[in-house]
Length: 155
Image (tube, rainbow, N blue to C red; front, side, top):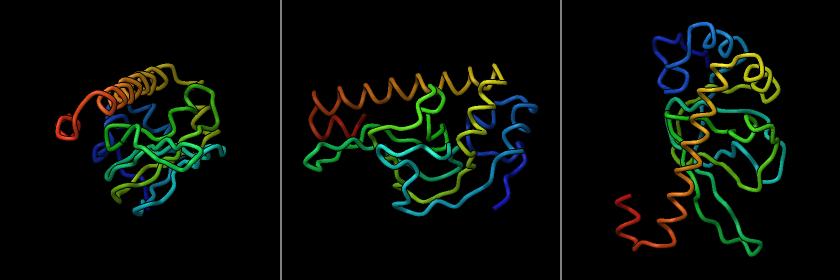
């Protein structure tokens, strides 16, 4: 699946990049179709790629040693799956999988790390998204611990 020109990009982060930063991403990216339940990041395994979702939804879940799972973060076309790589972390105890099928622009982990080291504005944009995702995760935890089911759904 070819990567589209920036004019037709549906991922918010990719759409706001400078043309130079977008071209740099495009030069190392590939378009991929994401099927329901595809694992994008396996728990406690090396993160191999980042995914800029163009459509669909990915769910990040935390699990207890007993196997109880809870969704802690969702990502759609506004963001990126693989934020730990931005922070120079190559694995996470959480699993991220496709909840609703869609499409994504995928970049290999080492190539993504090189790009964010070389490109200050790209690093800043993805860093701002990482902070927003952190706030979303904290809000989810607060809601799960403090609100009724109806209030959580309204969130």
